[in-house]
Each structure stands twice: as structure tokens, then as C-alpha cells.
Length: 103
Image (tube, rainbow, N blue to C red; front, top):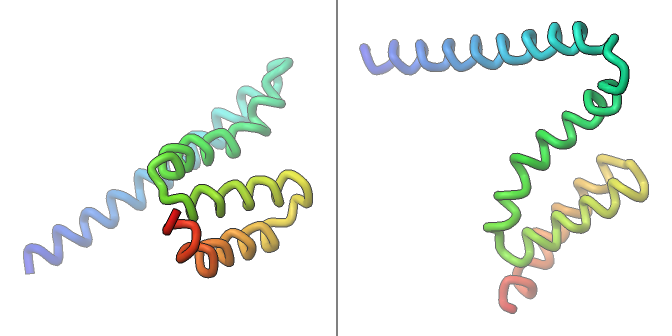
């Protein structure tokens, strides 16, 4: 029973930390919007944060993962279609992995 309580406590703390991080970022963003020149940074920030998490994972990835990520980036850049980009990336991983990882 104590292990279950510790697990529930850990989940609750993680949820609280995520909530506080998001709400704090929102309020900081509201305060910074009036500063001239910061708007492009705020608009690009989610993409930058995503790439900061994703780039190390891709760097350590297999050839099929790297090709899949390149396909997703290219399709997102050209079409701005999340569904298409995700579908192509998954297809590359599913169908291309046996051949790409053998290289």
C-alpha cells in the first residue's frame, strides 16, 4: 500500500509541475508580448523547444529514424500538413526500417 501511495504522490507532483510550468510560461509570455522584437522569438519558441528535445534523439537514432525525421521535416516545411507528415514518417519507420537499418 505505501508503494501505491508513493506512486500516486509522484504522479500528482508531476502533474503539478507540468501545470505550473505551462501557466508560468503563459503569464511570462503575456508580459513579454509588448516588448518590440520579441514576438518572432515567442512564435518560434515551441518549434525550437521541440527540436531541442528531438535533435539528440535523432542523432542517436538508427538510419530509418533519421530518414523518417528528414521526411517529416521536409513535408512539414513544404505542405504544413501535420497529418501527412506524421503518416509519411510512420510509413518510413514501418516499411523502410528493414532495408534502411540493414545499411
